[in-house]
Length: 391
Ligand code: SAH
Image (cartoon, rainbow, N blue to C red):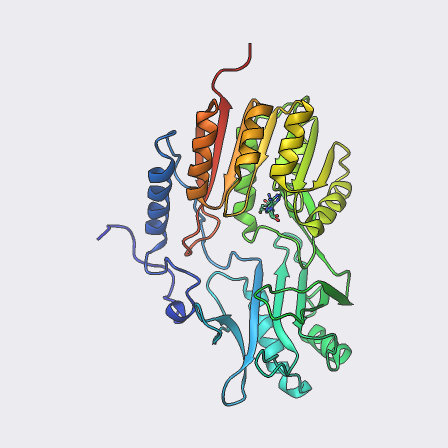
């Protein structure tokens, strides 16, 4: 056994049923050691791996809480998470990694439902209304968004319900009804109605302000996201003349922070909502040297490589599945001086690094960042430079 200090977190009573925090049986220093060793075993052959950046207080870091709603056999309303690989809901009142203010709001909503005679939606009988509640909080702005996910637009007493919720939680800044009539594992549907406020929240990261809509991707651990982005931008060493590509850019966060140092930035993203938010975000921060393309990153890279354009730095942050061969091969053709590869899955990152290192790049920096304490997820930033700069 390790000589590390004992656990500081009381063991979560729901850990086995919930399954969200896979590493709860290890104390935090041990979790970090495990993640470090995993990155070393996958990427260590390319370069020295710097010690993982952990959190000082690795609790309540999630700025987004999503709670499923249902009825027990006895007819009691429950809210919480689906029991691992089942459709049973484990009741959660508070969670060690979620934002406590958001958890409190979910509990209030659960307690309010019976007096308003609002029923959770039942997928089998197709009766009832409320499927999920999503709460997002801007950790720096303090703004809070509550999203009711209903099975139909018929939200009984929605005005009175919203008023009562706001009376009990005046800290809420916007309330949205999202309508999801589909039998699907996707949480949010396509239709939305704003019930109160502006329909989005804003938050600040690395000194830039970002709009977050109910459906846009936004990093869930804002404190560590700042450290992640700073690491990535330190590695990128941007100059005012650099042309930069931010691939898989989401709502444009990294690219917008980069645009303050670089000449020109282009962001590429598949999700149309995220691209719309990214464009608003660029204007919101007064930036005119950044543009966003709604496209598959691989297809866009192929076109860019064919057009003979010059790119100095590529920042890439693909989803867990990693990048793809069209993207990586076009990257080799474009031959930027530096590539900063941010990944939330070092296994696919290792696979992609094989292609890039065979194609003439050398890894010169590896920095894991703990974005998801107590879970098994690992985030890692890698810097690659061209091994033989063109003469
Ligand atoms: N860099 C952003 C988002 C990273 S998450 C941030 O730090 O917040 C990965 C993003 O890749 C998501 O926004 C997802 O919509 C997008 N994505 C997934 N597949 C893609 C593809 N084939 N082409 C372009 N973007 C894609």
